[in-house]
Image 1: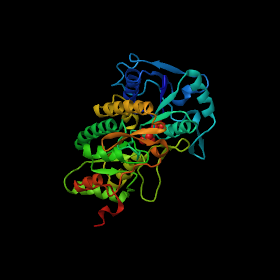
Image 2: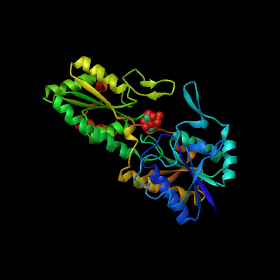
Image 3: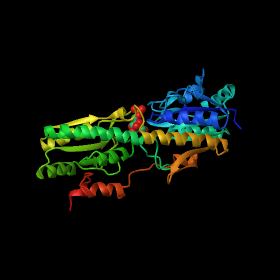
Image 4: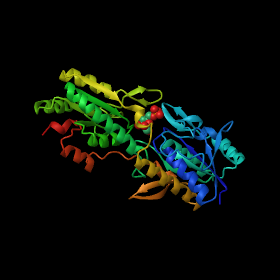
Length: 361
Ligand code: F6P
């Protein structure tokens, strides 16, 4: 069995990363007698002048409730190059990384990350290096796993924001817009919108029309509710139009919330304000669920390595942690089904998605 394993975190951070790291270290050392090396700043830590840290039970003591990642992370780094505005995984540094892993005495790797990190991890597997992936994204949009850690904490943060916006919206009779994360999918917007009693939810999966947004605001007005709360996923799109970017080179989404605010204010004459929740959704302490899921993923990842079940990613399906091949792990994105039960429930209780046809009947 492996004498020493490496662990790294890649991509954007998510509450619960430290829970995974702690569980990996405790399981590897306590249950299987392996040593653990933390690779710093994603795969960058095993390139050039390597930077790593020895992980023991005492170095991971007290990190369970801490946000971020004690190992540091990078969004792109040396393995990813932008080609025609799209991220491409470069092949070149794998050989250098493998040589450095050999020098460091790291015999297997646990890579915690999203699509990009797991695609890089798969390349290590393809070169015969034992690797296990742990899925991470607050957007909860990986089809292979029912849930990713960080998502529940992000919903808690967005729900609290909505609660707070509610009271100020009602006091001023305003339209309040909350822009939340969700690059390709509206899971955070949908869940927080339901939990935080939004009136309108705009998500990428259901393109909206401003006519419908305005109709929904006016219907509330006519029924005596003089304020409206709107949740907008950052990737939401108007019918026939694309996503909105604050930086087209880096493909950084942004601006949809404020765009909605301007149009709504102009078309209804009602004072409107936009709050962009941004990285508040990613920072800070994980909630109890995310600590538990991260811990479960971490321990199961080490067990999978021990069992030789490599080239896989741990995933939650039907309440149980299973493993799926890394090649399938990121193949499909999990979008909000427009005719799914949560959308239907939202509509049943009077929440509008401002789809063009919503007010046709
Ligand atoms: O993938 C998770 C995510 O939270 C997206 O919803 C968002 O667009 C992105 O990260 C922002 O990441 P960063 O600011 O780190 O580039």
